[in-house]
Length: 218
Image (cartoon, rainbow, N blue to C red; front, side):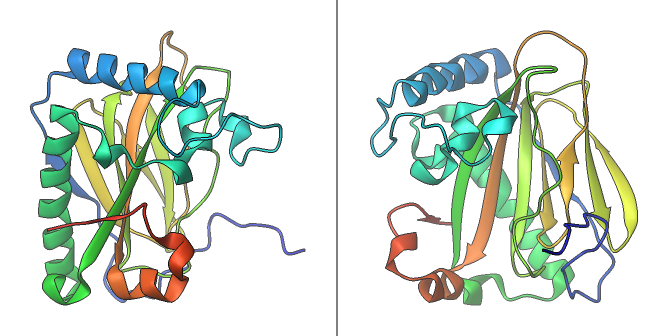
């Protein structure tokens, strides 16, 4: 089996890699409280469609149950004001990214999925991974709810990049570039909301099993 090399980007984009950013004005104490309530419900399998935690969960080494169960819910279907504001921010960033990569936003008929990560220092984190074998028009990003100070490391076309996480800031990158949480040493939950943005045609190619999870991005 070929060993995974995070330094090798899978994107075939000819444009230089770029992060797109958006600063929100959410009440982070309220958003944190709302997400931790949902975390408890996910842990208890009381969110519709979420099954009890098993021994062979993917991403179990993160220590975050809401990460392990990312395929079984969509954070953008939670009735939370701050998450709705994030939806609007993602729409703005994707339109900016499409302009940069010369992609027709309307033509892609974008769909959105999201989950949230709750991690604790020295108890697990997201290690090197990526989200797609291609770059634009596929995008991924995350929003820092309670992640400051910490870093997220990327490799983009062989260049090591460090994103310094700032609470209330959302970022977006084309897919096809590996990234990982760096270690942090403070107490309390490190909370981020992550999201994937994918064209409708790609989800149709994925088959019916991909339905009932993604929602349209306007």
